[in-house]
Length: 480
Image (cartoon, rainbow, N blue to C red; front, side, top):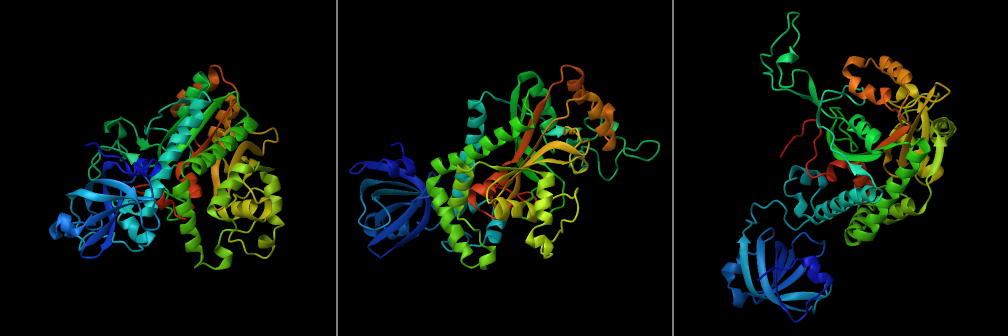
């Protein structure tokens, strides 16, 4: 007999019918005569109750039904007499497909800290919290592709192995087949990369943007969605060494067009979560509420998880320039009372997360699009404005997160772009392929990047980015 997924059964109860379900035991409780088994197959946050009479199956089988064990259960679907569920299954056949030793299985039915679960990342998806996060992650992945596909964008795969540094910051993981103990050397004692696999230095990509621009200047509107890597020694709740980036690039779009698309995109993702992940979001909202009860009042978010999501969906984002933002911050109470860890005292400083959160949560009280940043703190490919001090860049700031999107109008003028590359000490000879897009049919174009895990933090209400990706890669941690 074919088995039915628990979500399907709960959505369309087949009361009076005999069905087979398969899944993993969450809990078993009961008496010597009857046992109540909570079964979950991952399709939904809700468990299905199995009623199993000890006499029918024997104590030897019942003993094997422990937390974590995998079962196949056949029985009649009936209305539940207990509270908390509409239906249950009266077990007629139970097969233990995989036993789970209760003395060794680390995820017994009790509350575990997130720190403990990170050490058990290979098993933590079996918990209610991480099951919800993984299902929402899938929904968001699907929503990303649907948004762009429905708007005529083409998905482009950009290389993971690359010889270019898109950001010009040098925080890249090197890829090599050379013997680290005895690498070949040139006559002047430097590593001879010509002997390496690619015959030059190669790295893991920090961004697919530059390659994405090549496609946009042929196909019009494209997007990439892939893994990116930063060798940044940051042990924070907002940084990963390996994460996923969504990077659209659009020909004939200026900064205003770029910002409007990014706002539409973020609202679409939030709305998709609200419409398609209701049960999981309700659970995570209740979890956040319970967690915040133990925090001081000043550390609790002003809005609940669902309120924050609806606030983003239902409000037009605020707009301000970097210059206006700095003026707001300079004159703010936290800055005047020296409560910022990084005081804002002059134009040109790079805003920190505490500044971004103040703008969103205290001043505007909704998402903010900040534009026209100083060119000295932004990347070489961003279009220089007429004032020659700022670039046509934008960051979108979210409550609880800070920067969630960064983007810009790209510099389409060959002479300005090469001048900027010199300022960043980027050698033209290694970037001729990129400069060709400015030599042959250049045009106004723009793009932005959304860190997928940052979006997941916002949608799920989790506070550590290591908890919204299956296997977090951080300094000193590359397990599994």
